[in-house]
Structure formats: C-alpha cells, structure tokens
Amino acid sequence: MRTSQLFISTKKEAPAEAELLSHKLMLRAGLIKRLGSGLYTWMPLGLRVLRKVEAVVRSEMNAAGAQELLMPAVQPKELWEETGRWDVFGPQMLKITDRHERQFCFGPTHEEVITDIARSELRSYKQLPANFYQVQTKFRDEIRPRFGVMRAREFMMKDAYSFHASFESLQQTYDVMYGAYSKVFTRLGLQFRAVAADTGAIGGSGSHEFHVLADAGEDLLAYCPTSDYAANVELAEAIMPDSPSALRAAATQAMTDVDTPKQTACADVAALLGVGVERTVKAIALVTVAGEFVLALLRGDHNLNEVKIAKLEGMADFRFASDDEIRAALLCPPGFIGPVGINADIRVIADLTVAAMSDFICGANKPKFHLSGVNFGRDLPEPHIVADIRNVVNGDVCPDGKGGVLELCRGIEVGHIFQLRTKYSEAMNCVFVTEQNTQQAMEMGCYGIGVSRIVAAAIEQNHDAKGIIWPAAMAPFSVAVVAVGYHKSEAVKAAADQLYAQLVAAGVDVLLDDRNERPGSMFADMELIGIPHRVTIGDKALAEGMVEYVARREGEMKKIALSEALAWIQ
Ligand code: ATP
Ligand code: MG
Ligand code: MG
Ligand code: MG
Image 1: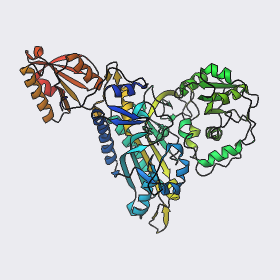
Image 2: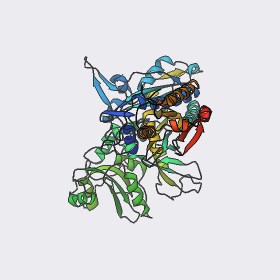
Image 3: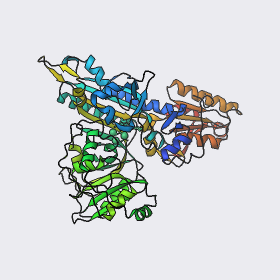
Image 4: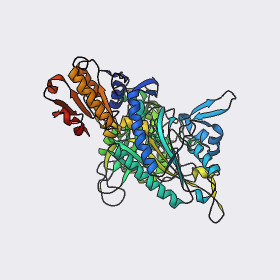
C-alpha cells in the first residue's frame, strides 16, 4: 500500500486522559479513536494490527482442532436465567430491552449460548469431543474502563468452548489448548507466562491465565524460577465484582449483628491518603501473629500490589487468613463497614471508603463475626487454586514444596482457560447418550483470548522514545519504503516504484511512503507507527546505486545496494 492511499493520522501529543504508554502511543499513531468511555474505533492502521493478531489466533485454534463459528452478540435473558447468571453476573452485564419488552444482554461471554447449541446438536458420545470458537465483540460494563483498549467496555475476544464425554477427554483438550495458547503468544513475539488462576465469575475447577509480562500490568504474578510453579496473586478484582448473589446474602446475614463502629479518625486517614473522606480506596489488612495489624492504604486502585509488597517486605511475622475468610470479606455487600472479622489472623483486600477504613484503624469497635457457619452454596468457585496462592513476597518459599524461592512480576492478562466441568451442562441439561445408552452431562472447557487487549499489551513490551516497535507477526506493515523526493526526482520515483512492486510481488507487506513531506516527518511517522524495517530511497545514495536500511529495533543505518534490497529484506 502507498501512504497516499492510506489514512494516516499521527499526533505529536496524546490527549491528557491517556495515562498508559500503550494507550498514548495507540492514540498518537492513529491506531484507535475514542468514541466514549471504553468505546474505541479501530482506525485502518490499527485494524491491520488487530487482524494480524486474529490471524495468528485463528491459525492456532484451527490447528488445535477447534472449529470457527459466530454466535449472536445479543443474547436472550431466558438462557441466562437457566444458569442463574442473569442476576449473578452483576453490573458488568449490559442489559437491553426490545420493543416487545423482552430482555436481552449484550454478551459479556458465551457459555450459555454455546451450551444451548451443544444440547440440541450434540446428542451422542460419537459426536464428542467437540470444540468451537469465535472471534467476536464482547461488551462488559467495566467499573473503570481505562488504558484504551486494554480495559475497554466493548472489546474483541476469541472465545472457545469444548464439550466432552469424560473428564479425561476435557483434560486432553485443555492441554492441547494450553499448548495452542503458548504457540499464539510465542508467534506474536511476546514475553509471557502462564499462571494458575482463580475461576472468577466463569466458574469451574482448574484454570490458567496467560500474562504478557509488563510493569504496567494490573496483575501480580508469583512464580518460582526453579520449578513450574506460577500463580496469579491478585484475586480481589476477579472475585469481587461478579460475586454470586447467594454469597452476598450470606455475607450480609453474617454481618447483621455487627455494631456500626464510630467513625472517628476519618479526617486523619483522609489526610494521610490525601483524598476526601468518601473516596473509595483499597485496603489490605494484615494481622500479625503478635496480634498487631498493619493496614496498607492505597490512593488509586492499580498500585495495590506495590503497596502490598512494600508492606509485606517490612514484616517478617504474619499469617494470611483462610481462603473462605478472604472470599467472604471480598464478597461483602456495598455499604459494609469495616473490612474484616477479627477472629483469626486475617488478610483482606477490599474496596472501602476512607470513613470505613478509619474505623478499622481506630479499632474501637472492630466488627466481629464468624464465617465458619456460613453455607456457601454451589456457586462458589472451588477454592483449590486460591489455596495455592498464599505467598506473595519476593523470596518466600515456594508453596509447591520443592524448596524454590518465589519471585514476583507484573502481568497483563491476555488469555484465560478454564475447566468448567459440568457447571453449565448440568444447569442447562446439556446431556448426551453414552456408549452404555445412559444419559450424562457433558464435561466442558472454555478458553478466552483478549484479542484487542493483546495489541496494547504488545506495545507495553515493545516501544522506545520514538514510538511502537511491532513484533514481526503483528506489524501493520513489515517494510516501509520511504521515498525522499518522490515528487521531485524521477530517479527516486522510478527506484521506489520498482522496489515497491518487487516487494508486493514477493508477498511482503510493504508501505511505500510517497508523500510530499519532509524526510524527518516521514521517518518520525514510520518510527511512531513502528514498522519493523525501513528502506530509504533518496537521490544522493541512489547516485551510487545505494539505499539506506534501518531496522526499527536496532536503529542503526546501513547502506545497501538497491539491487540487493529485495533479497536483504526477505
Ligand atoms: P480481567 O481480569 O482483566 O478483568 P477477566 O478475567 O474478567 O479479565 P475473562 O473473562 O477471563 O476476563 O476473559 C478472557 C479474556 O478477555 C481476558 O483474559 C482478557 O484478555 C480479555 N478481557 C477481559 N476483559 C476485557 C476488557 N474489559 N477489555 C479488553 N479485554 C478484556
Ligand atoms: Mg482476570
Ligand atoms: Mg474482568
Ligand atoms: Mg480471566
């Protein structure tokens, strides 16, 4: 393609609301354009990148034996009532009413729809296993859409769902998909890590997340360099917004006899944090073995882990709460005052108002309740992964018992796979006829990739002061041919047109910059846009039969013969 045909809209400055580097660069390079909170248009250049990511994802899904289909984005309420998730999914779900007053949602995920397909289409063990995927727009009404397409409300997901006659078969496909995910992120040229994860609102048993490693990541990962232990430390965000209603009810019940503490130190706490009294912040409470407690306070919400680490590193002697206590604390209903039950040594991560937190700090009327008597109901994700995730300090002994030491890093969740087991198939009567002619609920797996988030995550990992440096597999163009003086010099025009034609014929994704611009601004654009290879054709070098070559990542200019340019690039 020629720049004269391509819509390019680069900017020197990013709008003030863009905090994260990838967000700034995506706006400056003209890859995306904001329409509203969490809503972005993929501009032509950005869409090329998105399509390249999709292509890699599709090819690995096909290779893993998954079949592509495309389900409706809008889903009827009735399906979600069958699984109980119409109420449970919470405010992340965008609900829609049609002209007949029927209710729908804009799909945040597609377990219900695919299970509905499976129960009517897959009847016999002979049709199993089956694995379907789609690449589709999802909508989640995120509390805080931020960082551009990194946490958008409307975003592109690849979601796959597998159906099985046995747990063994599910495990096999799960392993194949795990492998396929590793191939996707390797082919995309990303540094990533797979970690054990909580199952959140999707539910089920085993689960792994795939994280692109980046300092800007919202998640904190603990891993052991000498074993294969790796886990997501951060559970709070995953659990809290989508908590099952039964749990909320149980937590509310457990707190009915809690005295409302006096809100004495609000002003002090607010001053400490530099925020207003009603501002919601996150708190982490740790009760030490000695019975003291430390409260880690936080101003924003995505530096949670920094504070957590800082506090933890200063303490030798603490114990974490049990998983149920943590869960219960996290699932407390809105308006809950005071973060924890203080019967045990406890760790809590919770959203609190400053006023509520000050009660805890003062401690005059610490709320007291036991959670042991609470019956958690079927909806609760099984706690085995949670139980795995205890040590969150650099240098802690790895919980796998192999004697290694944990290290921490940050990650951006770009993929998540789950063994759903029979959670959905039982709720929706998705059964098949076995070889013995009996009926049995299907085992299920589901597998998500944040296709649009990957684009931002890749930039977090691949950039410099000049702009984006695309990994080869997702670059909008592989080569930029910058023709300096295209409109003034016949020789430059002829050489540029010829090299361009050769590259096109060789199947190279090439962008010919034939604009009538200053060389400096053409270079700056190509660097900001992040095209991996650049060939510059100008009169001076051309007189000696030479052109200039620069690899975006290395940045050093080499002179090469025009006649060798094609071979050089290939
Ligand atoms: P997160 O923890 O970041 O909120 P999630 O655990 O809610 O993500 P999943 O339900 O596991 O998300 O969905 C599969 C994938 O979809 C995620 O791994 C992520 O890459 C992507 N994704 C989820 N929410 C968003 C979003 N708001 N914007 C962009 N991508 C998203
Ligand atoms: Mg998550
Ligand atoms: Mg989420
Ligand atoms: Mg997830």
